[in-house]
Length: 130
Ligand SMILES: [Fe+2]
Ligand SMILES: [Fe+2]
Image (cartoon, rainbow, N blue to C red; front, side):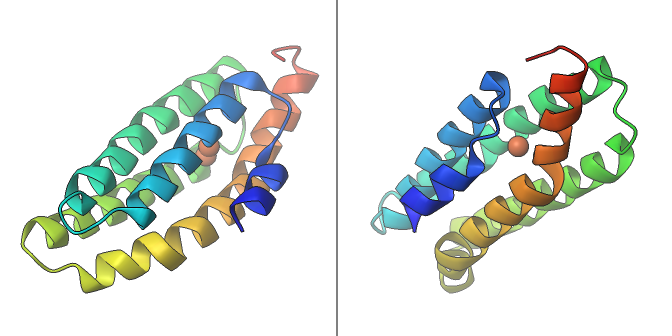
């Protein structure tokens, strides 16, 4: 699963691909973490996601990307969702957050890259950013 996910996610634009590789590493760490480490690992995943999104949004601004509002709204939604699961774990409720880490994150990440980020990379390459 992880290998296939990684393979599909490579868009050929280093600044995006590096963030995606880091996101995948943090996701797998959170998914595989034990009870003592789950909160910190899930928090690290969301923290990185937020900075990853800021970098991507700066790229979109640099290339005057037309779908930026839609893409940013999706980023905001996902950070809020992730923070919600972190708050549940902090309160001692891990069942939903474990399902989020095991099922929702990889499903979402793959779809987001295929549906949203791949188009940014395509336009950025046309703009000569790559
Ligand atoms: Fe994105
Ligand atoms: Fe991304």
